[in-house]
Length: 147
Image (tube, rainbow, N blue to C red; front, side, top):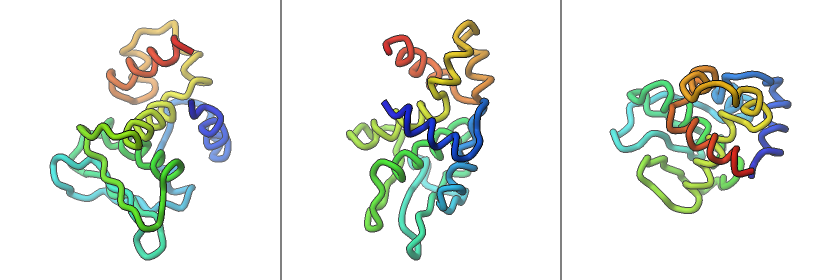
């Protein structure tokens, strides 16, 4: 769904092998990134701070969750960003824009053009190579096989 955009983005930052480093992409896009203690139910926030897009990532989340949240907020930044909106990443939120950001995040962390090279490996090995959760890998493998 977002494969061409993701290919362009990764090419722009010379990323051609896993694991994808979403923090490098965020910085490269001019997004300020901070790890901050947020309420337990909030994984990340994207907002405009002094005319600069800013992400707050919950420092108490595990590293795989933080990586997904950064990719998720990059999705909001590229697909939905407006200077006067604030985006909260609640893991239980299921609105259309949250689903789009989740799909973008999973596709960014496991892009089709890289994932295809590893389909002969186990789910656990793919998760390890791409440094994502088993759940994200399962979702992307289902997406990939239906393309």
